[in-house]
Each structure stands twice: as structure tokens, then as C-alpha cells.
Length: 321
Image (tube, rainbow, N blue to C red; front, top):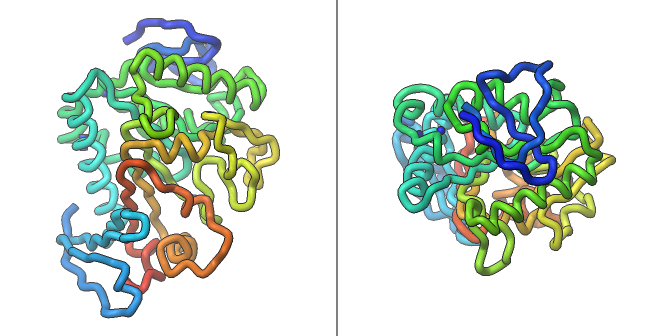
């Protein structure tokens, strides 16, 4: 599936020019600037739990729809097939929104998500996507310098942003010179400015920003963004961007979008690969007998939710076991 350098100052949010980026270069305090599958048919076993699934299959992929959440669940024979399909899905949405208006707002997460986007930087997508329309944000970020190995910005730069011509002013990174609380407030201020100027859409129902596409990974404990199981921030319903200083997973200081923002999205893709996450995928998509929801189960967007799973991640779902 198938993204120079102009400065617009707002608060202290930082945006960078890709051509001159290196880990020692000072970061420019701007709020907006420019940065330069094949399906093998698989059948689903008959099982009583499949009553909640409406199934169809494609070559190398099996797809179901879960009526309760209206989520699409796509299972691929390999992570490679998953990445191919994710590229096409993202490219199709990019083209759709680019034709409708002057921007395509995309939210990235950290972890293995960026690796799964690798097919976007290859033909045909790298040459066919209108990268100039992309506006890139992060669903969460660690409050560390941007050259630090824990930085989600650095992860995205190395694996994705440095390989595509997204304008530098369209890449919205946090100001890592601020405290966690200050960085969260600064990022929220930026989002509100962009909503006011109609660069980011606004949900008519919730009033929160409505991103075109949110690309999310999931931790082995079921966390998404920096919203962890049992943490009070999962219940935050007023702020757009919040912060955490005692993250159960290092580094301890982070900022994160809240669930009202995540769930106001037009499209959410949950991308999960590997057998190590099979138990949590089963807990999220299987029969839920638990009273306490995992954060990933709280993802319920106004728009469309699509799960991208490889067969390892889906191995404990009855439909694919």
C-alpha cells in the first residue's frame, strides 16, 4: 500500500528535516515542518465458538468478522504475508483520504509495528503513494532524547521515515526537552491547533480528534500505546494526551493518547505477530469470561477496526487452532 522544509511555530513541538538528521543534530522547536498477500487457502475448523464469527477466506489469509465489536480479524500464514497486506491496506486508505482532502493523518506506535510497515517503502507503494499528504503522529512516546534507543521516533525514523519523502513539517514529534507532563500538554496543544485548522478531522460524536488511520501494536500483557492493564490512565476520558511517570515497562516516563482519542479514529489497525502473544489475542478475541478488560479490548473505534494477525498470534483462537 502505498509521502522539504517549511516552519510553522506552535509551542515547542519539534519537527525535523530528514535530509540533515543525525543523532547529534540539534532538534528544531517547531510544531509543523517538512521531512524530506498472497493468500494459501485455509479452512476454519467447526467449533461452537464460531457462532460469533462470520467467515470468509482468501489465499494465504483467513478473515472473520466479530459481531460484538464489528472488528475484522485477518489471519495470515506468515508475518511476511501480513506485512504485504498491511502495506496495501495503508496505501488504499492513503489514496482514499488524499483524494478527499489535503491530508492523510496517520498515527504510529512503537515496538514491532514499524517493522511490519516495511513493504510500504518498497515498490509499488513507495512510488505510488502521495507522501506529501501524510501527517504523522505517535500514539505514545517515551520521554527520552530522540537519539536514544528507546525512542519511538528513532525507531520510526530508522525503519520508515528515512525511506520515504514525507515532508518534515508533517512529522509531529514530542519535545523531549520537557518533562513528561509538559511534553503531554505540549502535544495536546499541537493537536488542538491542527484540529482548529482542519488538518486533523474532529469527531462529531465525541469532539476528540479523528485520525484517518491509527496503526497500533500490542504488548504481551495486552497493553496498547502506554495504557497498561489496571492502570488508572485507562479510565482517563477528558484529556487528549496524558503522561505516565511509573510505567510498568521501562522507560518509566512516557506520554500517550487516551482512549477517547484512540476510539475516535476513522480506521484502527491492530497488528500482532508471533506465538508469544497468542494467549492475549485469545483473551481479547475469544469468549471473554473476565470482568477486567485488557487495554487492547478497550479499542472500539467509531470507524473500522481491523486485526492483522499471523498464524502464530492466532494459534490459540479456536477458529484457527
